[in-house]
Image (cartoon, rainbow, N blue to C red):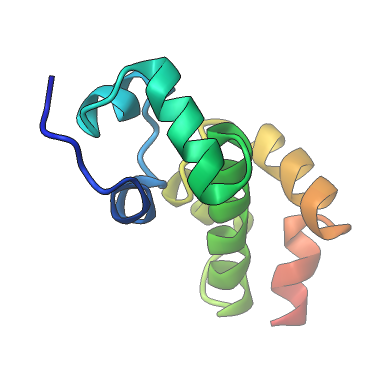
Length: 104
């Protein structure tokens, strides 16, 4: 197992990487259950929810810069599927990503 990494620093650096939680746990030097437990203590939410929020905020910021379209941002933000990205974005921000881009 890898040396234990600072979970906050590691996650803030790697949240855009599309890696399973098991891999993130191993890379931080923790078992999956320890990773999930420590993550919840540090961030006060589950890894999945935290990663989703971080990725959506990243995508929103990129779209507000007005230089990219949703179809260009979703992969960069760690999503594999444009439709999933659009649904999650609308759920988080109350409007589709194309509308955010139009506000830029």
